[in-house]
Amino acid sequence: MLNITSVGAIRSLPTSVHYATSKAAMIGFTKCLSREAANFGISVNAIAAGIFDTDLGHTLPERLLQMHDFWVAKGRVGRPEELAEYAAFMTSDRNSFMSGEVVIVDGGAIT
Image 1 (cartoon, rainbow, N blue to C red):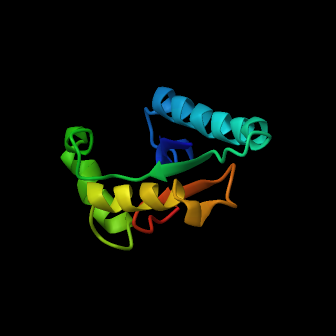
Image 2: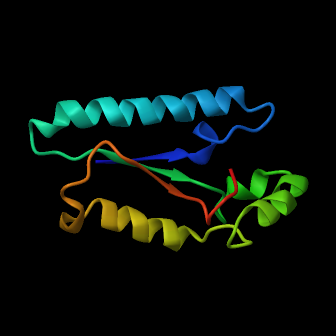
Image 3: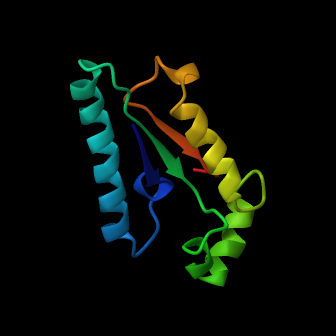
């Protein structure tokens, strides 16, 4: 099982308390459910995504996107297919031993 959450749960921004809280809840859900599902041979993990070139990413203020390019080592937003590749790996048999983990996929953002 793979949950998609946001780096907004880990790295806060002003005026985002409602968003950060909901995404942090998903991290707690992932970690707790991983313990319960392990008895059934099910792995539960999450990806904490940064800003990606999606409809949601396009709703962000231009000022934030410009700052994002400075904060992120890669200097750009992510492409949806990059996130899909991580998701495919995390749900594959090649990743059978990981459970209860949150992998940050954000292009190397500065904390």
